Image (cartoon, rainbow, N blue to C red; front, top):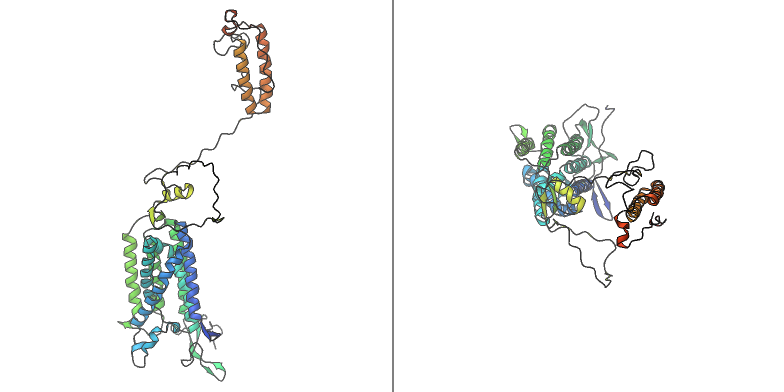
Length: 444
């Protein structure tokens, strides 16, 4: 008696209002949603317009399902064209039977068509999808669990899978005898769970390495293919479901080896930084200001929130140019040095201390005979102007400096009463020799 085992569902299809709802289809749809959301997030960080991932999914998903079915039928033809087979079952996808390699090939064709429609390089789509695709596969594998299919060989491990005998006359339900579902006599390797866990690990690996090395030109997708095929090799050899064999080895093992080598060669040969894209008509200069109009014009039909339109095509740029475009809305020329960060303004030093030697508070001694800085040599008009300018500078510096300047102005006025009259006060020019009045409070 087994004390520990993984149970399997006895039902994989439910009928709602006469319509069948199949667990296998729900798992596939859930996986597609997760992959699209991951790809959408990564595409936006590369400059692609919002929800371009949905445009890609419209093309890639149908092509991927068709390709997956074709691959399954080609590699397992006896079930449909052999003795007792029914060719019409080729179209009954809801019963299961999708090959991942056909899904990748068909999905790639659909993605290429979508990329042409959007004016995007296919490599941008592939690298953005790289961590999301294994997550979709992990979720999709639970559809095999609901269908009680694609399990491994017999095992005595405590996580062995209990498998039901499914009723062919009542698809989607286990065979029932005396009111109890019939199970197979042994426990089996839960290969669906092995692959689901492996796929999640592949997604994390690709995400971490791509974040560290910033792969470009499809190299992140090639890394996903290499990591996935490594796991698929050993998981495939555990399975005991019907499949074509070559030299005693399942066909999918050979396929995994060949695909791994091709992905490895691509990863090693192809080089290049991560691609970033901007609209093909991104402005390279500041727009000229429009002349002002005397007539107010209001567009009553305009919406409060402008709707961003998807570009008609994209151009690939470097990361520096992309970041500059994100920041300013202007695409700098190729090869231009990145703009330096804006300089921070220097803080104003508080004034009013006794040791200040700034130009607004310096006062020359009354007996100084210097030609430029002497107060005694300057005429009254020149002294008044200097006092006013110094007062305005002190007003900008703050109330403390203003008080200091006021004292300097009064000292300068005292010098005017005893100092010699300069050229501006000469009687021959008709000027009044009286000293000018001190500056008013408004001028200070």
